[in-house]
Length: 449
Ligand code: TRP
Image (cartoon, rainbow, N blue to C red; front, side, top):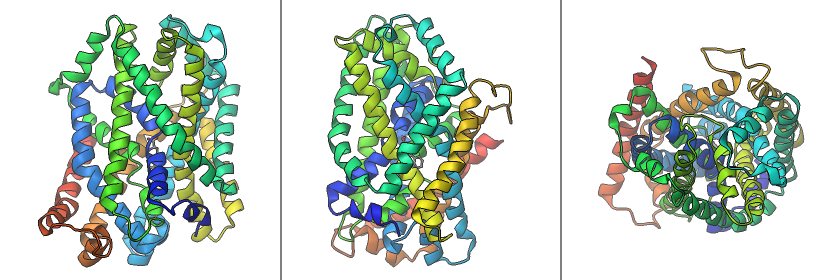
Protein backbone atom coordinates (compact mmCIF):
# COMPACT_ATOMS: atom_id res chain seq x y z
CA UNK A 1 0.00 0.00 0.00
CA UNK A 2 1.40 3.36 -0.82
CA UNK A 3 2.26 4.92 2.45
CA UNK A 4 3.04 8.17 0.73
CA UNK A 5 -0.51 9.09 -0.03
CA UNK A 6 -1.92 7.83 3.27
CA UNK A 7 0.15 10.52 4.99
CA UNK A 8 -1.61 13.38 3.32
CA UNK A 9 -5.15 12.46 4.16
CA UNK A 10 -5.40 13.22 7.84
CA UNK A 11 -7.83 16.05 7.49
CA UNK A 12 -10.86 16.78 5.38
CA UNK A 13 -8.99 19.67 3.84
CA UNK A 14 -6.13 17.35 2.91
CA UNK A 15 -8.51 15.04 1.07
CA UNK A 16 -10.13 17.92 -0.72
CA UNK A 17 -6.82 19.39 -1.79
CA UNK A 18 -5.53 16.06 -3.05
CA UNK A 19 -8.64 15.15 -5.02
CA UNK A 20 -9.10 18.69 -6.28
CA UNK A 21 -5.39 18.73 -7.14
CA UNK A 22 -5.90 15.64 -9.25
CA UNK A 23 -8.98 17.07 -10.93
CA UNK A 24 -7.81 20.62 -11.63
CA UNK A 25 -5.06 20.60 -14.20
CA UNK A 26 -4.39 20.89 -17.89
CA UNK A 27 -7.83 19.39 -18.47
CA UNK A 28 -9.47 22.60 -17.26
CA UNK A 29 -7.09 25.26 -18.48
CA UNK A 30 -5.73 23.78 -21.67
CA UNK A 31 -8.14 21.10 -22.88
CA UNK A 32 -11.53 22.58 -21.97
CA UNK A 33 -11.13 25.88 -23.87
CA UNK A 34 -9.97 24.19 -27.05
CA UNK A 35 -12.70 21.54 -26.86
CA UNK A 36 -15.26 24.34 -26.52
CA UNK A 37 -13.67 26.04 -29.53
CA UNK A 38 -13.65 22.89 -31.65
CA UNK A 39 -17.10 21.67 -30.68
CA UNK A 40 -19.25 24.71 -31.23
CA UNK A 41 -19.27 26.74 -28.00
CA UNK A 42 -22.37 27.15 -25.84
CA UNK A 43 -24.15 23.94 -26.86
CA UNK A 44 -21.04 21.92 -25.94
CA UNK A 45 -20.84 23.66 -22.55
CA UNK A 46 -24.50 22.88 -21.78
CA UNK A 47 -24.06 19.21 -22.64
CA UNK A 48 -20.83 19.17 -20.63
CA UNK A 49 -22.53 20.62 -17.54
CA UNK A 50 -25.41 18.16 -17.84
CA UNK A 51 -22.96 15.26 -18.01
CA UNK A 52 -21.06 16.52 -14.97
CA UNK A 53 -24.20 16.71 -12.86
CA UNK A 54 -26.12 13.68 -14.08
CA UNK A 55 -23.33 11.22 -14.86
CA UNK A 56 -20.06 12.30 -13.32
CA UNK A 57 -21.28 12.92 -9.79
CA UNK A 58 -22.79 9.42 -9.48
CA UNK A 59 -19.59 7.94 -10.96
CA UNK A 60 -17.52 9.88 -8.48
CA UNK A 61 -19.68 8.59 -5.60
CA UNK A 62 -19.24 5.09 -7.02
CA UNK A 63 -15.47 5.32 -7.24
CA UNK A 64 -15.26 6.71 -3.71
CA UNK A 65 -17.50 3.90 -2.45
CA UNK A 66 -15.31 1.21 -4.00
CA UNK A 67 -12.09 2.78 -2.78
CA UNK A 68 -13.12 3.50 0.77
CA UNK A 69 -14.87 0.15 1.16
CA UNK A 70 -11.85 -1.88 0.08
CA UNK A 71 -8.99 0.37 1.18
CA UNK A 72 -6.91 -0.57 -1.84
CA UNK A 73 -5.68 0.56 -5.23
CA UNK A 74 -8.00 0.29 -8.22
CA UNK A 75 -6.94 -3.19 -9.26
CA UNK A 76 -6.81 -4.60 -5.73
CA UNK A 77 -10.13 -2.98 -4.87
CA UNK A 78 -11.98 -4.77 -7.63
CA UNK A 79 -10.32 -8.10 -6.92
CA UNK A 80 -11.22 -7.82 -3.23
CA UNK A 81 -14.92 -7.58 -4.07
CA UNK A 82 -14.97 -9.77 -7.17
CA UNK A 83 -11.83 -11.93 -7.26
CA UNK A 84 -10.72 -13.36 -10.61
CA UNK A 85 -13.77 -12.03 -12.44
CA UNK A 86 -14.33 -10.07 -15.63
CA UNK A 87 -14.71 -6.97 -13.46
CA UNK A 88 -10.93 -6.85 -13.27
CA UNK A 89 -11.15 -5.22 -16.69
CA UNK A 90 -11.67 -2.04 -14.65
CA UNK A 91 -8.22 -2.57 -13.14
CA UNK A 92 -6.65 -3.21 -16.54
CA UNK A 93 -8.29 -0.11 -18.01
CA UNK A 94 -6.94 1.95 -15.08
CA UNK A 95 -3.37 1.04 -15.84
CA UNK A 96 -3.63 1.31 -19.62
CA UNK A 97 -5.53 4.61 -19.43
CA UNK A 98 -3.06 6.25 -17.05
CA UNK A 99 -0.17 5.30 -19.31
CA UNK A 100 -2.05 6.60 -22.38
CA UNK A 101 -3.01 9.86 -20.66
CA UNK A 102 0.46 10.48 -19.26
CA UNK A 103 1.96 9.87 -22.71
CA UNK A 104 0.48 13.15 -23.92
CA UNK A 105 -0.16 14.89 -20.58
CA UNK A 106 3.53 14.91 -19.82
CA UNK A 107 4.27 16.40 -23.24
CA UNK A 108 1.87 19.29 -22.61
CA UNK A 109 3.31 19.57 -19.10
CA UNK A 110 6.66 20.04 -20.88
CA UNK A 111 5.15 22.82 -23.00
CA UNK A 112 4.04 24.72 -19.89
CA UNK A 113 7.52 24.28 -18.47
CA UNK A 114 9.01 25.77 -21.60
CA UNK A 115 6.52 28.64 -21.57
CA UNK A 116 7.69 29.61 -18.09
CA UNK A 117 11.16 30.13 -19.56
CA UNK A 118 9.78 31.85 -22.66
CA UNK A 119 7.86 34.28 -20.41
CA UNK A 120 11.14 35.85 -19.29
CA UNK A 121 11.84 37.22 -22.72
CA UNK A 122 10.25 40.56 -23.49
CA UNK A 123 9.72 39.64 -27.13
CA UNK A 124 7.51 36.71 -26.05
CA UNK A 125 4.52 38.90 -25.29
CA UNK A 126 3.22 40.25 -28.53
CA UNK A 127 -0.15 41.07 -30.00
CA UNK A 128 0.75 39.39 -33.23
CA UNK A 129 -1.23 36.14 -33.55
CA UNK A 130 0.73 34.77 -36.44
CA UNK A 131 4.04 35.32 -34.71
CA UNK A 132 2.73 33.53 -31.58
CA UNK A 133 1.35 30.80 -33.72
CA UNK A 134 4.62 30.19 -35.50
CA UNK A 135 6.46 30.49 -32.20
CA UNK A 136 4.29 27.68 -30.84
CA UNK A 137 4.52 25.41 -33.84
CA UNK A 138 8.22 26.12 -34.29
CA UNK A 139 8.75 24.95 -30.73
CA UNK A 140 6.44 21.93 -30.59
CA UNK A 141 7.49 20.68 -34.01
CA UNK A 142 11.16 20.71 -33.17
CA UNK A 143 12.61 17.42 -31.99
CA UNK A 144 14.94 18.22 -29.16
CA UNK A 145 13.66 20.76 -26.63
CA UNK A 146 10.03 19.54 -26.34
CA UNK A 147 11.25 15.98 -25.71
CA UNK A 148 13.66 17.21 -23.05
CA UNK A 149 10.88 19.27 -21.45
CA UNK A 150 8.55 16.27 -21.48
CA UNK A 151 11.19 14.11 -19.82
CA UNK A 152 11.90 16.85 -17.30
CA UNK A 153 8.23 17.23 -16.41
CA UNK A 154 7.88 13.45 -16.12
CA UNK A 155 11.02 13.22 -14.01
CA UNK A 156 9.74 15.84 -11.56
CA UNK A 157 6.43 13.98 -11.26
CA UNK A 158 8.22 10.67 -10.79
CA UNK A 159 10.53 12.13 -8.15
CA UNK A 160 7.56 13.42 -6.21
CA UNK A 161 5.89 10.03 -6.39
CA UNK A 162 9.02 8.18 -5.27
CA UNK A 163 10.32 10.59 -2.68
CA UNK A 164 6.97 11.11 -1.11
CA UNK A 165 7.21 14.84 -0.84
CA UNK A 166 3.61 14.84 -1.88
CA UNK A 167 2.71 16.45 1.41
CA UNK A 168 5.00 19.29 0.55
CA UNK A 169 3.38 19.68 -2.84
CA UNK A 170 -0.03 19.61 -1.21
CA UNK A 171 0.99 22.32 1.19
CA UNK A 172 2.02 24.52 -1.73
CA UNK A 173 -1.10 23.62 -3.68
CA UNK A 174 -3.26 24.96 -0.89
CA UNK A 175 -1.71 28.37 -1.47
CA UNK A 176 -1.08 28.18 -5.19
CA UNK A 177 -4.48 26.96 -6.34
CA UNK A 178 -6.29 30.03 -4.97
CA UNK A 179 -3.60 32.18 -6.60
CA UNK A 180 -4.22 30.40 -9.90
CA UNK A 181 -7.91 31.06 -9.45
CA UNK A 182 -7.29 34.77 -8.98
CA UNK A 183 -4.98 34.88 -12.00
CA UNK A 184 -7.60 33.24 -14.19
CA UNK A 185 -10.23 35.70 -12.92
CA UNK A 186 -7.93 38.58 -13.90
CA UNK A 187 -7.39 37.02 -17.33
CA UNK A 188 -11.13 36.52 -17.77
CA UNK A 189 -11.85 40.16 -16.92
CA UNK A 190 -9.16 41.36 -19.32
CA UNK A 191 -10.37 39.02 -22.02
CA UNK A 192 -14.02 40.03 -21.62
CA UNK A 193 -13.16 43.72 -21.87
CA UNK A 194 -11.13 43.46 -25.09
CA UNK A 195 -12.46 45.08 -28.24
CA UNK A 196 -14.33 42.44 -30.16
CA UNK A 197 -14.81 40.15 -27.16
CA UNK A 198 -18.60 40.22 -27.61
CA UNK A 199 -18.44 37.71 -30.47
CA UNK A 200 -16.73 35.29 -28.12
CA UNK A 201 -19.28 35.92 -25.38
CA UNK A 202 -22.05 35.12 -27.86
CA UNK A 203 -20.22 31.97 -28.83
CA UNK A 204 -20.16 30.97 -25.16
CA UNK A 205 -23.75 31.93 -24.38
CA UNK A 206 -25.99 31.24 -27.37
CA UNK A 207 -26.23 27.54 -28.02
CA UNK A 208 -26.54 26.26 -31.55
CA UNK A 209 -27.81 22.77 -30.94
CA UNK A 210 -27.56 21.88 -34.61
CA UNK A 211 -23.82 21.66 -33.96
CA UNK A 212 -24.34 18.76 -31.55
CA UNK A 213 -23.46 15.49 -33.26
CA UNK A 214 -22.72 12.06 -31.87
CA UNK A 215 -19.05 12.95 -31.84
CA UNK A 216 -19.70 16.16 -29.92
CA UNK A 217 -21.61 14.25 -27.26
CA UNK A 218 -18.76 11.80 -26.87
CA UNK A 219 -16.25 14.66 -26.80
CA UNK A 220 -18.23 16.33 -23.98
CA UNK A 221 -18.50 13.08 -22.06
CA UNK A 222 -14.81 12.34 -22.48
CA UNK A 223 -13.89 15.88 -21.43
CA UNK A 224 -16.07 15.60 -18.31
CA UNK A 225 -14.43 12.32 -17.30
CA UNK A 226 -10.98 13.66 -18.10
CA UNK A 227 -11.47 16.86 -16.15
CA UNK A 228 -12.89 15.14 -13.07
CA UNK A 229 -10.26 12.35 -13.13
CA UNK A 230 -12.97 9.71 -13.53
CA UNK A 231 -13.19 6.36 -15.24
CA UNK A 232 -9.80 4.95 -14.42
CA UNK A 233 -9.56 4.28 -10.76
CA UNK A 234 -7.90 7.51 -9.72
CA UNK A 235 -10.74 8.34 -7.35
CA UNK A 236 -10.91 4.69 -6.24
CA UNK A 237 -7.27 4.92 -5.21
CA UNK A 238 -7.68 8.29 -3.50
CA UNK A 239 -10.97 7.13 -1.97
CA UNK A 240 -9.11 4.38 -0.17
CA UNK A 241 -7.28 7.04 1.82
CA UNK A 242 -10.41 8.88 2.89
CA UNK A 243 -11.34 8.68 6.55
CA UNK A 244 -14.41 6.56 7.30
CA UNK A 245 -16.17 9.54 8.85
CA UNK A 246 -15.88 11.86 5.87
CA UNK A 247 -19.00 12.70 3.95
CA UNK A 248 -18.42 11.43 0.42
CA UNK A 249 -21.16 13.66 -0.99
CA UNK A 250 -19.58 16.81 0.34
CA UNK A 251 -16.18 15.91 -1.05
CA UNK A 252 -17.62 14.97 -4.45
CA UNK A 253 -19.71 18.13 -4.72
CA UNK A 254 -16.89 20.41 -3.66
CA UNK A 255 -14.43 18.84 -6.08
CA UNK A 256 -16.90 18.86 -8.97
CA UNK A 257 -17.80 22.48 -8.24
CA UNK A 258 -14.18 23.63 -8.02
CA UNK A 259 -13.21 21.75 -11.15
CA UNK A 260 -16.15 23.03 -13.18
CA UNK A 261 -15.58 26.55 -11.89
CA UNK A 262 -12.00 26.46 -13.13
CA UNK A 263 -13.06 25.11 -16.51
CA UNK A 264 -15.74 27.75 -17.07
CA UNK A 265 -13.39 30.52 -15.96
CA UNK A 266 -10.74 29.23 -18.34
CA UNK A 267 -13.33 29.32 -21.10
CA UNK A 268 -14.17 32.93 -20.20
CA UNK A 269 -10.50 33.84 -20.17
CA UNK A 270 -9.63 32.25 -23.48
CA UNK A 271 -12.62 32.28 -25.84
CA UNK A 272 -13.51 36.02 -25.88
CA UNK A 273 -9.84 36.80 -26.47
CA UNK A 274 -9.70 34.24 -29.27
CA UNK A 275 -12.47 36.11 -31.07
CA UNK A 276 -11.05 39.53 -30.25
CA UNK A 277 -7.67 38.55 -31.71
CA UNK A 278 -9.18 36.83 -34.73
CA UNK A 279 -7.73 33.42 -33.92
CA UNK A 280 -9.72 30.49 -35.39
CA UNK A 281 -11.45 28.88 -32.34
CA UNK A 282 -11.10 25.36 -33.75
CA UNK A 283 -7.26 25.45 -33.55
CA UNK A 284 -6.95 22.49 -31.26
CA UNK A 285 -4.21 21.96 -28.66
CA UNK A 286 -2.31 25.13 -29.54
CA UNK A 287 -5.25 27.47 -28.75
CA UNK A 288 -4.37 28.41 -25.17
CA UNK A 289 -0.67 28.75 -25.88
CA UNK A 290 -1.31 31.19 -28.71
CA UNK A 291 -4.05 33.20 -27.00
CA UNK A 292 -2.79 33.72 -23.47
CA UNK A 293 0.48 35.50 -24.30
CA UNK A 294 -1.58 38.07 -26.20
CA UNK A 295 -3.73 38.70 -23.14
CA UNK A 296 -0.60 39.01 -21.00
CA UNK A 297 0.67 41.55 -23.52
CA UNK A 298 -2.41 43.66 -22.75
CA UNK A 299 -1.82 43.64 -19.00
CA UNK A 300 0.56 45.70 -16.83
CA UNK A 301 3.50 43.55 -15.70
CA UNK A 302 2.55 41.07 -18.41
CA UNK A 303 5.80 39.13 -18.14
CA UNK A 304 5.46 38.68 -14.41
CA UNK A 305 1.87 37.50 -14.76
CA UNK A 306 2.89 35.19 -17.57
CA UNK A 307 5.69 33.63 -15.52
CA UNK A 308 3.39 33.20 -12.53
CA UNK A 309 0.60 31.77 -14.64
CA UNK A 310 2.65 29.15 -16.47
CA UNK A 311 4.49 28.24 -13.29
CA UNK A 312 1.28 27.62 -11.36
CA UNK A 313 -0.27 25.88 -14.33
CA UNK A 314 2.70 23.56 -14.30
CA UNK A 315 2.16 22.87 -10.58
CA UNK A 316 -1.52 22.17 -11.26
CA UNK A 317 -0.45 19.78 -14.01
CA UNK A 318 2.03 18.13 -11.63
CA UNK A 319 -0.58 17.43 -8.95
CA UNK A 320 -2.70 15.77 -11.66
CA UNK A 321 0.23 13.85 -13.14
CA UNK A 322 1.09 12.49 -9.70
CA UNK A 323 -2.40 11.02 -9.37
CA UNK A 324 -2.07 9.39 -12.77
CA UNK A 325 1.37 7.95 -12.05
CA UNK A 326 0.22 6.74 -8.65
CA UNK A 327 -2.35 4.44 -10.28
CA UNK A 328 0.34 2.67 -12.30
CA UNK A 329 2.90 2.64 -9.50
CA UNK A 330 0.38 1.28 -6.99
CA UNK A 331 -0.49 -1.49 -9.43
CA UNK A 332 3.17 -2.41 -10.03
CA UNK A 333 4.02 -2.45 -6.32
CA UNK A 334 0.92 -4.17 -5.03
CA UNK A 335 0.06 -6.60 -7.78
CA UNK A 336 3.46 -7.24 -9.40
CA UNK A 337 5.34 -6.91 -6.10
CA UNK A 338 7.93 -4.43 -7.35
CA UNK A 339 9.56 -2.11 -4.89
CA UNK A 340 8.29 1.44 -5.10
CA UNK A 341 11.53 2.71 -6.62
CA UNK A 342 11.62 0.03 -9.31
CA UNK A 343 7.94 0.63 -10.06
CA UNK A 344 8.54 4.34 -10.54
CA UNK A 345 11.57 3.73 -12.77
CA UNK A 346 9.65 1.24 -14.93
CA UNK A 347 6.73 3.68 -15.21
CA UNK A 348 9.11 6.51 -16.09
CA UNK A 349 10.74 4.47 -18.85
CA UNK A 350 7.43 3.36 -20.39
CA UNK A 351 5.85 6.82 -20.37
CA UNK A 352 9.16 8.45 -21.25
CA UNK A 353 9.31 6.44 -24.47
CA UNK A 354 5.64 6.74 -25.43
CA UNK A 355 5.67 10.43 -24.59
CA UNK A 356 8.75 10.97 -26.75
CA UNK A 357 6.92 9.50 -29.72
CA UNK A 358 3.86 11.58 -28.98
CA UNK A 359 6.02 14.72 -28.77
CA UNK A 360 7.79 13.87 -32.03
CA UNK A 361 4.42 13.29 -33.69
CA UNK A 362 3.97 17.06 -33.60
CA UNK A 363 6.96 17.40 -35.90
CA UNK A 364 9.14 14.78 -37.59
CA UNK A 365 6.61 11.98 -37.08
CA UNK A 366 3.66 14.11 -38.22
CA UNK A 367 2.97 11.92 -41.22
CA UNK A 368 2.89 8.75 -39.23
CA UNK A 369 -0.83 8.37 -38.55
CA UNK A 370 -3.16 5.62 -37.42
CA UNK A 371 -6.90 5.92 -38.12
CA UNK A 372 -6.07 9.38 -39.44
CA UNK A 373 -4.66 10.54 -36.11
CA UNK A 374 -1.14 11.43 -35.03
CA UNK A 375 0.35 9.50 -32.10
CA UNK A 376 -0.37 12.44 -29.76
CA UNK A 377 -4.02 12.63 -30.87
CA UNK A 378 -4.33 8.88 -30.68
CA UNK A 379 -3.29 8.78 -27.02
CA UNK A 380 -5.63 11.66 -26.28
CA UNK A 381 -8.59 10.28 -28.23
CA UNK A 382 -8.25 6.68 -27.05
CA UNK A 383 -8.05 7.63 -23.41
CA UNK A 384 -10.73 10.32 -23.20
CA UNK A 385 -13.19 9.01 -25.73
CA UNK A 386 -12.87 5.27 -25.25
CA UNK A 387 -11.04 4.11 -22.13
CA UNK A 388 -12.51 6.59 -19.63
CA UNK A 389 -16.16 6.22 -20.76
CA UNK A 390 -15.84 2.42 -20.84
CA UNK A 391 -14.11 2.48 -17.44
CA UNK A 392 -16.82 4.75 -16.02
CA UNK A 393 -19.51 2.50 -17.47
CA UNK A 394 -17.98 -0.56 -15.81
CA UNK A 395 -17.59 1.30 -12.49
CA UNK A 396 -21.28 2.23 -12.25
CA UNK A 397 -22.34 -1.25 -13.36
CA UNK A 398 -20.04 -2.71 -10.72
CA UNK A 399 -21.40 -0.56 -7.91
CA UNK A 400 -25.00 -0.88 -9.13
CA UNK A 401 -25.07 -4.60 -9.70
CA UNK A 402 -22.13 -6.25 -7.95
CA UNK A 403 -21.41 -4.33 -4.73
CA UNK A 404 -23.98 -5.07 -2.00
CA UNK A 405 -26.63 -2.37 -1.78
CA UNK A 406 -26.21 -2.27 2.01
CA UNK A 407 -22.49 -1.62 1.57
CA UNK A 408 -23.14 1.26 -0.81
CA UNK A 409 -25.61 2.75 1.69
CA UNK A 410 -23.12 2.26 4.49
CA UNK A 411 -20.43 4.14 2.57
CA UNK A 412 -22.69 6.92 1.35
CA UNK A 413 -23.93 7.52 4.90
CA UNK A 414 -20.42 7.04 6.34
CA UNK A 415 -21.56 4.18 8.53
CA UNK A 416 -24.89 5.80 9.33
CA UNK A 417 -23.45 9.09 10.57
CA UNK A 418 -24.54 11.12 7.56
CA UNK A 419 -28.27 11.60 7.08
CA UNK A 420 -29.47 10.46 3.68
CA UNK A 421 -33.14 10.50 2.73
CA UNK A 422 -34.37 7.11 1.59
CA UNK A 423 -35.82 8.62 -1.58
CA UNK A 424 -32.51 10.29 -2.38
CA UNK A 425 -30.61 7.04 -1.96
CA UNK A 426 -33.13 5.24 -4.16
CA UNK A 427 -32.72 7.97 -6.75
CA UNK A 428 -28.94 7.70 -6.70
CA UNK A 429 -29.11 3.94 -7.03
CA UNK A 430 -31.47 4.24 -9.99
CA UNK A 431 -28.99 6.54 -11.71
CA UNK A 432 -26.08 4.22 -10.93
CA UNK A 433 -27.94 1.06 -11.96
CA UNK A 434 -29.80 2.28 -15.02
CA UNK A 435 -29.56 5.88 -16.15
CA UNK A 436 -25.77 6.29 -16.13
CA UNK A 437 -24.96 2.95 -17.82
CA UNK A 438 -27.64 3.47 -20.46
CA UNK A 439 -26.65 7.07 -21.15
CA UNK A 440 -22.94 6.27 -21.44
CA UNK A 441 -23.66 3.30 -23.71
CA UNK A 442 -25.85 5.40 -25.99
CA UNK A 443 -23.22 8.11 -26.31
CA UNK A 444 -20.49 5.55 -27.01
CA UNK A 445 -22.46 3.53 -29.52
CA UNK A 446 -23.93 6.60 -31.18
CA UNK A 447 -20.49 7.94 -31.93
CA UNK A 448 -19.04 4.63 -33.05
CA UNK A 449 -21.64 4.11 -35.78
N1 TRP B 1 -8.18 15.73 -14.29
C1 TRP B 1 -6.84 16.09 -14.65
C2 TRP B 1 -6.90 17.38 -15.45
O1 TRP B 1 -7.95 17.91 -15.65
C3 TRP B 1 -6.11 14.99 -15.38
C4 TRP B 1 -6.21 13.71 -14.65
C5 TRP B 1 -5.62 13.40 -13.46
C6 TRP B 1 -6.98 12.60 -15.04
N2 TRP B 1 -6.00 12.15 -13.07
C7 TRP B 1 -6.83 11.64 -14.02
C8 TRP B 1 -7.79 12.37 -16.12
C9 TRP B 1 -7.51 10.44 -14.11
C10 TRP B 1 -8.46 11.16 -16.20
C11 TRP B 1 -8.34 10.21 -15.19
O2 TRP B 1 -5.92 17.88 -15.89
